[in-house]
Length: 508
Image (cartoon, rainbow, N blue to C red; front, top):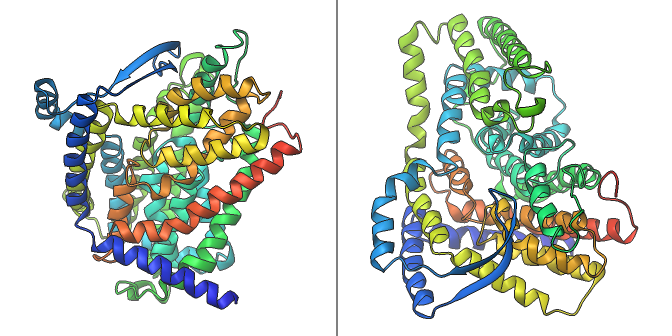
């Protein structure tokens, strides 16, 4: 029976992958999405569809009564917007800059041979059974530094698995599941906690002007959730994803099959020393109370350090890559360094083209207010359900997961939803911090299967490195088991936690 169910699961995922990959090129898909948004925006405009709701201004964090109307892209103003903002939409897209900056450092480290030697050396020492949970955990922990996980750890997960002669797509999937599927879980506070708690506080003040949701108010639950996501990610990777993928033949692995040479070992030692020195120098700018890279009031979370974390990661990869290259003679002069930097961006050409169209679609979708209208209308519909307590929270989680497929920006989405659901749930005895936890579960679970998530095209581009035939269908088929498992098991875990009356954070 178990074997039959496994075969059904594999057939279903193969069907999803094959169907998805038979679709037009992702560039064409986003072009079609753009066309659909243009038409839909005009239809909604002609029907005079609008919503009025009490929302939190994400900039001022003040609660305001807002009326949002559908904006057409086919009226003169809409046409002017599309034409005049094409370049801005592209260059300001959230995934573009961080990816290119990080890839300069990662690319040099990879092409100089440093990453390959490091992985080969690690393979000979690290217990293989801990590889998957470590990759998932690193992905979860990376959300402390915003988007660094997407641009560094997702491709690194593939490289790590390849180093252990495992399928790189399984490593990519495990890392992506940790980075994005477990986005809200963590052992420490991240940049998202103060932002979401600020929005929740303003929403709670609609009923209680003295109420404050602190950044730490979800901490207990998120610490426990970290271990849950690691277990889920490890099981799905090892028992479902990797067996389905089968054996991967790495045509470039012969060089390191028998370990690293003496000169490579010497290069690795010097490169690792350079990493340590680089990290110490950065720490000296951050850790002292008056550190140059600290923010107002000595904050580390809201600081130049966190704002520049992608640049820091670039340096942490770039420095050892250059040192390793000079020691092993793969780099001889500054021209070689510049050439490696340039060649590290060559594989991103297809991604850049894809991002151009994806950026237009996301910008047009936001401009037309269709996402806001759908979210508010859905919230109003959910409000009609006459349920309370745990069932209400479960329905809310699944509703958030659904909305997340169409509106990826978590803070913008919460700014719309919090003023509706936090007061509503407060009236039936549900603490705002608990409502925020439920939102974060639903918001995280479907990130990994939503093409509208800003970094989804990047993951597709990384997957294509290990097979040109890999496309949107490949990534969705890989990530769907994670998404379903995370949504169901995390929801069950939360329901048990809530029913037992365990506080979700300190002071609750």
